[in-house]
Amino acid sequence: MDGQSWCQAHSARDASGCKVLSITGLRRVCYVFSQASLSNAFFCRYKEGLAVEIVVRQATEDDVTELATLNKRLVVDQGSRNPYTASEYENRFRDWLRGDEWNVDIFVDSEGVILGYAVYTVQQDYYYPDQEVVYLRQFYIDRPMRRRGIGTAAYELLAKERFGDREVAVDVLATNPDGQKFWAHIGFTPYFTSMKKR
Image (tube, rainbow, N blue to C red; front, side):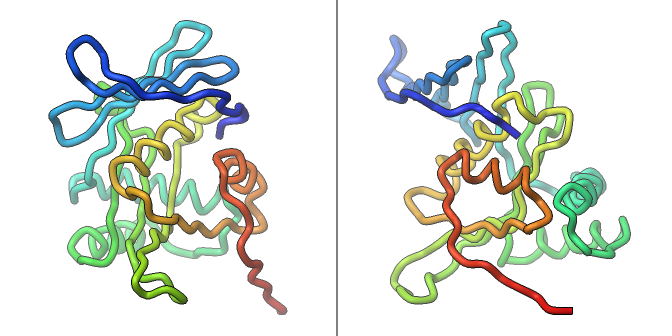
């Protein structure tokens, strides 16, 4: 996804009183604007002058077909052995959306085009049951959107909007070195290694 590091961040209020988080990177400046809406918008302004607005929203059953397509791409990209068919992915998303355990959010641009999605739950910490931890089961940015800062921006927006100050745990397959690099890039560190013998 992205290969660049943040080097500075600060928050302030603009002339209208909106809180603005400015994050300056090696090639870009990103802004988060607080808005009186369902979601905050995240703008990534690039050296080349491009700008992408990212909004996070809750998925609905109308999104299931596209979510299933993205999930299949995630499985391929990370080298998973998941044998699900398209209909099985769709049914699983429907179950998640109808249940209480999993949250499914979608990242879209200003025109409503889906950039990626996330599936996560908030659960008790195993060792400290008085504390909550976010288990981020799936986080995916579609292939054409990668290496443009969108993955980092989407995660930061998701964390700000949904996770609060909770710790976040992710599983990254050994067959997914790009995923490992991405998570390390945004500050995640290895916690344990799961091994298998065939």
